[in-house]
Length: 295
Image (cartoon, rainbow, N blue to C red; front, side, top):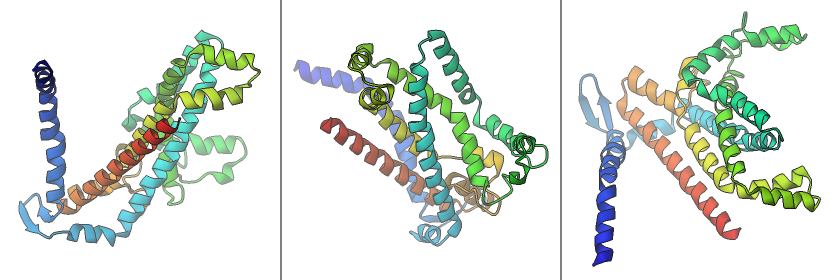
């Protein structure tokens, strides 16, 4: 009886959270899928059931596939820089012997993350400006002016330019999280490795890397999920241009819903984003759990 009472009491404590999640998270997800089966003009209120036609139109839309490819590129580069690059830099920062310099370096790397994406996007918009921008002027100053170009105005460089800004803005936050994870590793393990004559590279591979695997798995999951929800930086810097070369799923959803007034198609894109992120999350959790069992 006491066990049943405790379970009921525990359920009572979490019930408000479950209700809020159901009303504001899971119910809208179900409604969004329902909306994606309609041709819906939100301004006139006209709705027409079209089944899966919105998804068929997306499958034949080259801009949608280009946007999806940009999100995939965004995710891959983000994992490289904001996960593995940040882990390496965090290990270097934590290897500095002076605690004062450690604090200084953590602060220096974290400052860009304190800047909002909108402000960072505007900042880099002027950095990339072809005539007076800092990047082209720097190239001129070192004799590489021939490589200067309209970075956001060229289909070849626009998406990579946006991704570069995003990595700069979010890199410090990842470094700080990995630094915290490394600080939790017992110092005795590093001292024992040093006494055994293990060099810094092997200490990183044999001690640091295995013991921050939980944080690494979490960062990969968060980074991939965030990469498929990119919106602000693209809207601020390029609005999807030039010639839709920087469209991502979030901006294409916005354009379909609020510019073309096709909310059925926008809802279908939203469902695609949800499916991709949930599949990535489940796959990452499964891989992490399997590795944890092996280790």
